[in-house]
Length: 148
Length: 429
Image (tube, rainbow over all chains, first blue to last red; front, side, top):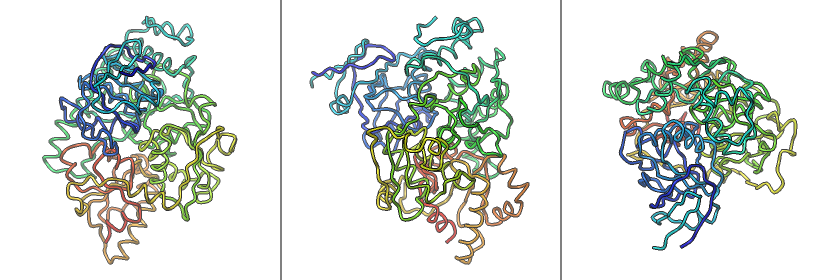
């Protein structure tokens, strides 16, 4: 068991499966295909994302450094939260970027979404957690990597 | 009222308290919470009043967007400085679609386009010719000056405004661009502050010839992500004074860096306004270094995956102009295509080729260079103001062999990227 502590952007408690992107997560490129097709799950469609291309991230815990790409990014996060096909939590190793922050705030203020968001978890967090690991998130910003 | 950390004026507090209506309250709440995340100490006035929005497409699934627009219309809320907007997703006249495609576009993908444009006009869309990602071109007229504070989105426009015009704008998301334009204030953090406009990366361009703008931008974007790069060695290829040609180059370079990474500001040594003014003092101590030579560019180019279903398919459609082309780029593509066709003893291109530009640039092309416009169409090429990215976002198009010279389009679609010279060969041989 290993613990990490970050800054709470949107609080909540949740236990679930990690999906890890070591590179910047391109929001539009990743979500657009599933969102446009009105799918029930988001299958990451970003061809540049070697870690998560083709992976289902709905209701999972997305672990990432930051998001990158188009400035539609925030609205895209708000939309997938509205469609309830969003990752249940966004865990950033670095300080959250402005587009992801917009998406989280929009989802909270306008959709009353239960999406969880923690940033500044540190480089070691992304180096340690692997896709498929089970994480437990506490509302004070603690993230626990549970033993397999 | 929400808990917040920044200092707000009495007027701003009143909005947050809901004294100007619930929709204004929610917009202000969004901006304040957003600013608090980044430690903004206050809201600052948007000095360039004309906004630029990224969401130009009426995709029905964007329910939160339409619901918000409905609320704004209902309460008669308008952006006082008006705004321009990214390109439309469709242009049946110049980018032909078959019956099935039209059905999918009209009924499913962009079924709310017409309604959405009516909503936009009520909220402050400048006019129906204001759909382009290159709002800052002189023909389009939404061009901030150095030091202006903006409430814009569209990653390629934001990075251009920050870097080439010396304006100040964060990489705002869709919705927040509109909220800032309506409220008239944006939280002060990030690229609005001097200290965050310094470079944490030094890029040394050591190529033997002018690098392809779209590959150079892509390489830098993928390397530095959201950091500010200071590029040394590019001025020897593109000059030390801004002009139409190098602005067009930096437009394409910036778009690639913003879409393949998250660059919001770059400095080009001896060329862009802040680099000219402050020089290498813009480089932070301990900045990282990245050397780009011919080999590195080729390595990046070769790393782009081929997403076509049939890897060796013959190109069916070619988009040139994402971001939209400038007037001088349109003129150059006309002469380059003409020359290449002549070389191959042909008079028409061998697949559908679309040059994209802002509606007002197209109007200017027709008004002042009718011969060029006619020549383009004579070669079987069309000029459209469509957003290629939005056009390619559907399953019917996914199976098509589309080629492009845009790294942004490559990133967000199944289109294959080719260098300008290769594109010319592919469409004319």
